[in-house]
Image (cartoon, rainbow, N blue to C red):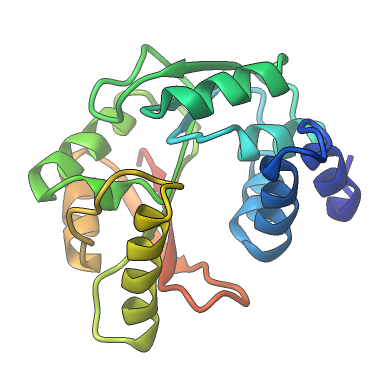
Length: 214
């Protein structure tokens, strides 16, 4: 399926309309440009995918709706969201886990909006861990907020506070990396990093990091 509007409807349909995740999935995929970007980028990949910080399975549901047939393993520290994803998307596998202790994997890796929950040394460890799980020709895709002096960064910090106090994500962000930190950590992990804006129509200071083995 290549019609993203229809794929969004199918992805949201994994959850009953009485569940807030139905409306969250609709809205998240409609407004966040990273979902169609990931679907296009991995459209022809037959490699297993590791989705780090998968939450309730929004990305997995959307990829399946887009026709992505490779195995998908989602990992998240939130046991409640893992249970929701497992019940809603039986064609994928989900397990409770931490980005610092990822399961064995060789393929593509996606991690969206997770890195700021770790301090700088642990962020480097996470990137090292991702590097060791990329298959030859595999894609490492990170979406993160970069620390800078922009108004987008200020809004992103407020949004992080809001999702924490609302209880949607019950974890406090530790800090946001700079572009230089990400490039240095990727180089130390033996990876090339391409960094580009990925905020679409949102006001957030989101960037896409594509990691590849040279």
